[in-house]
Structures are given as structure tokens and as C-alpha cells.
Image 1 (cartoon, rainbow, N blue to C red):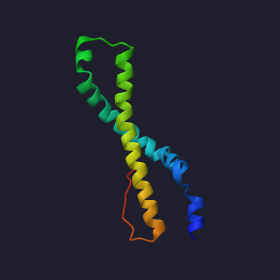
Image 2: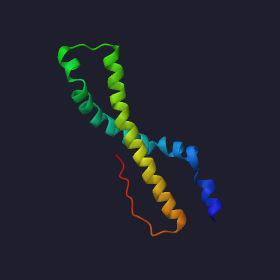
Image 3: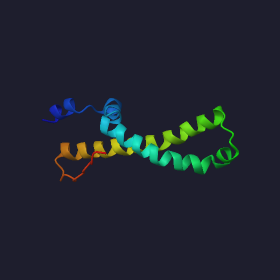
Image 4: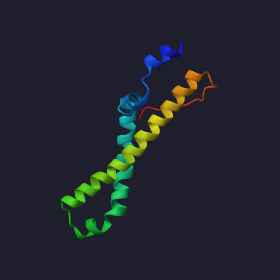
Length: 102
């Protein structure tokens, strides 16, 4: 039975990437980035916004500012999904994880 589980759920880097690019993970991360990104941009780039200096450097930094919450959300989603898969495969008492669609 464990070999069946292993073939249906990839492990290692490939398994991580499969979970990272799942539609639910991407959707959740985009929503988090769209909420947190503007707040962080306002905090970090207030001087540039107030002075109106919107150069290439500003937009590069803004892109990175949105990438951070996207990456953190994706990483935490993947780790939660992997933990749930591990607990199911070891026969441990399952932890109820409910992922609500957004």
C-alpha cells in the first residue's frame, strides 16, 4: 500500500512544485498578494509615491514587494498540504484541515 501512495503523490521537489502550482494554491496566493502587496508597497515606498518618482527601480521594487506575500502564502499552503498527506499516509489520527474556496 505505501508504494501506491507514493506513486499517486509525488515526493521531493517535484511533489513540492506540483502542490505549489495547484489552482487552489495559486488562487489563494494571488489573493493574499493583492491584499498585502499594496499595504507593503505603501509602507516601503511612501516617499517615492508621495514625490511622484515612478521609475523602473520603483516598479521593480514594487514587483518584489508583491512577490514576497505570494511566495509566503504558497509555501505555507504547500507545507500544510504535505503535512496532511504525511499524516494520512502514516495512519496517524487525521487532523481536520478545511480549505475554503475563495
